Amino acid sequence: MSAPNPTQRTGRLSTLAAAFVIARRDFVAILWSRSFIFFLLGPLFPLIVGGLAGGVGSEIRHSAERPQLGMVLAGDDIDALLTAQKALAPHLDSLPELVVVRRLKPGESADPAAALHDTGTNGGNLAAILSGSAAHPVLTGPKGRIIDWQGSVSILSARATGHGPDAFPQVALAPTATSTADQATGRLVTAQGAQTLLFLLIMLLAGMVLSNLVEEKGNKIIEVLAAAIPMDAVFLGKLFAMLAVSLVGISVWAATIGGVHLIGGGQTLQSLPTPAVGWPLFVALGIVYFSMGYLLLGSVFLTVGSMASTVREVQTLSMPVTMMQLLVFFFATYAMAHQGTPTEYAAIAFPFSSPFTMLARAAIHGEIWPHLAALGWQVLCVAVFVRGGAHIFRRRVMQSGPQGARGQKRRLWSILRGRQAG
Image (tube, rainbow, N blue to C red):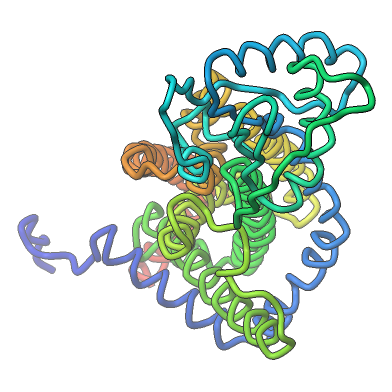
């Protein structure tokens, strides 16, 4: 028998090609299995939990800044009203917070509605505009808001103009459709809902890689694959196959829930609080951030699965990962309520909380370039975690069994030598 030529091709697939083969195999096997039907029914339970926890969404309104009443008045009227507010604030909790939007010069006029929708004024938290004069105030803003503030503004005007306790100025109302404060509150609610949905989906779907891996370790399929293709390819293939299956499941759930919702006459996206980047880009970013978060957590779960040989061991080892993910979610939620602080920047930089924090930022702020930078950072982190996880995966899986892969090779070599002797 001639010695093998070292330059001859062995026929072994490259890592990427082998990973594609594993991904296609797992994707097709799971998609056409009966268990996939139960997999699609799984989100019914998180949806029930999410509905029960929906009341928590009202809490996020308290984290928003206090709505402000902007003043577009002459300088003397502004000073008089600020003095009146300072005097009455200790006695009346219902008084709005007054901010100066524009001091008008004698004979100058301004459009209150335009000032109301100026998001660059005072952080974009104006709920209404006070114009006219201290003696004849005019409130411009959403109808419900200005009706609530009508009495407080009348009291302020009476104090500022020196009216008696029984003579309060009449406050004219000029209703508008919305205000920047209401818009900011709606975007904050959208951000929290998106974060919660992203967390539920990742936690629900990322754990599937564990059961699949333990099953194949138990029936020795992993060892057969290890003999044919690189273990790094097995890791990559399984990770991206489960991501593809998850995206298929999310598509089915979204289509089903959306169809039922529309048939039942529910709200459409246009009637919900619109995110700062708009719905099309927000949905696209949600898919991308889900993929990044899934790959990060999935690589950790695959690494944990390589260290376990039974379902009980999987549950024991995965519990700390699950608890840490809950802490990460709370960290991202806390960062959302503290925009522009070091806490938010830390949540963006930390790989596991970055997808949640950036998705919330897309709902609140309209800038695009931070998402490009964050996605670049997340892709780098995914590459590092996948590479490190594949290395640990290869070492742990090849050591599975009573004697490990080295003992299996020795047994195989003994069998081959016995056949040659025979």
